[in-house]
Length: 381
Image (cartoon, rainbow, N blue to C red; front, side, top):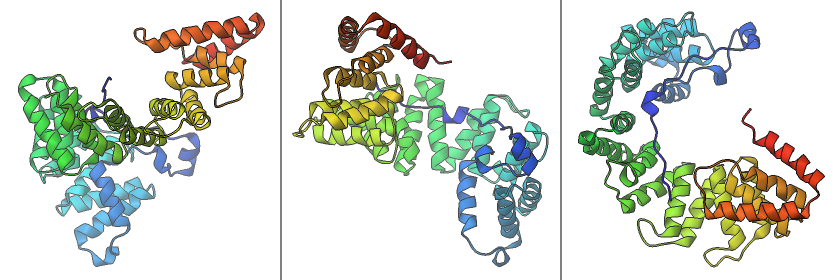
């Protein structure tokens, strides 16, 4: 089994978005067209929206609440003015919001330099969002920052006790691939995961199981993959399910594994749809086969371009087991399942045999038409 989780969240700064002509005409871009707010600031905005009335707050908090309200209705100039007032009163969130607005050009031309000045002001007050964004900007050499500063900003945020910063710092150290920093990377990821940051669960599991410089501790990794899956991570749910099914990292538990795989499929992961469909088709953990439900899941996965789902759907259509027999559609899906993949597997030989069988059964004119259709649908263009 190939375990392939992990990410480089620290390295991806959201680029400014360009509103549509209709949005420019209306004057207020939709929330979907705005650059995402920094994570902590977004959480604060949500709390502000349901908090005390502005009149009941201090002058600084009142300014920040006004900034939040203005931002959420698209009044970015007003949001900037109120954010700057809040920052002048010592509110770190105000400086972070001002930096965010200037970074993304929400009141005019974007300015990395102006944004960095505001983020530095927030960072001096220990604001995690600002430190994380400064790290990202430094890694790209933007706003007058240098690449070597990236690690310092993240370390400062992590050492202040912020779980999100601990997570990103651990990923940063992993991405550097320095064996000497392996223990530190694992410690930060562990801290983030044990602090309840569910986004860190899968990354910590990957570091434990498959990272080149990790301990290759499958038992501990399985625990965290299960937690990540139960917290809503589709890939982790699938990996946990496969580990449970195959007895990796502990005793095999087919029932628990099947539940995790179904969970991943219900989250919408195409690869999990194919795995779940196969388990339904075969029957698992004393559950009788259910070809009809298997075909439903295989069809969902096939339409989402999962090759295993496509092959299973082709097989069901060719045999009439779980769906009405349809050799033409079976041939279409077996061709779709033939998309290039690395290496040859036993499943590829099974697919080849099914393809050859269908080619013997269908007229050449039908074969040619279906080949064209499958080629068009498989094209990335």
